[in-house]
Image (tube, rainbow, N blue to C red; front, side, top):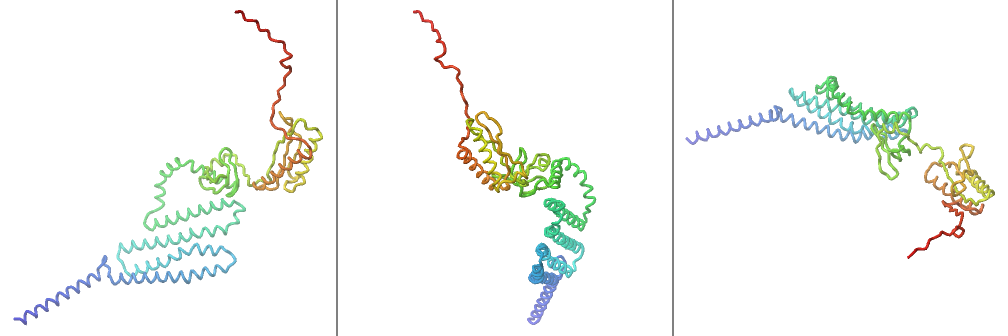
Length: 391
């Protein structure tokens, strides 16, 4: 009886073990969405190998490309390689994901979903590389700046970046079964409504193109927009232009305002003007006036800081009789257009004029004054009769 019981117990344990083993095998084969766990682990191992390859690819292949490009005379290839390295660095990741999913042998619809994801990543990488490559390629077309302008070339590449993003997004949408053509047609009415509300935006955009094409000013130049702002141009955008005032406050002016306004570009001056009115006392003699005129004119013509009268208008003349002075006109131009240097030249001219008037001509500067003329003194007038008062 004891022997029979042990035998049955052993049989029961064996059956339990077999059942457990069958359960373990079943879980191993169909553990995750019907996929063999062993294949999942193998796929993860494959993906890890590609990550290792990614590190080796970056360390040796991409580093080698950088060394080769650094040996060339031009910097364009260096910047191009530097720009596309991040997208190339992402290629082994996509390759590892593709090989891993292929090894898993997934069934539809999961296989189709992962296939679309991988295709989208490939498209993203390609257009990412194109987007980053536009910046170094822009240096290749610097010759266009002679025909257009530097800002116009920058605008062209800004538009190209938008086009790259738009086309890349359209390709990704097509991969996921979203047709871009009907989508754009459906957005037609919406676009018309937006256009009506965005008239100012398009107006500023067109005005910005006009400003750039006419080459009115460039970033870094000092301009004055009548009644609006005076300062240095920092950036010409699609909608507005950023101008930094001399107190360092930025001002964003709509391009439409710039297109219609009177704009003075001080940075393109060939010379800087000095235009003064100098008043001397009325008691100054004719000989003293001639000395002052000739000495100031001689100083301007002989000083190398002033432009020759053959190239610009230069005048030193007795100009008018003011309310309290005889006025000289001093009209000349300095060679420098730099504000600080111009102030220094103007200061030297002021000191020279003071020396000429007071020391060489022995005259004096006039100042605003009024004269009061009295025809008769009170003593010469008849006395006013005041009748006596009666008590």
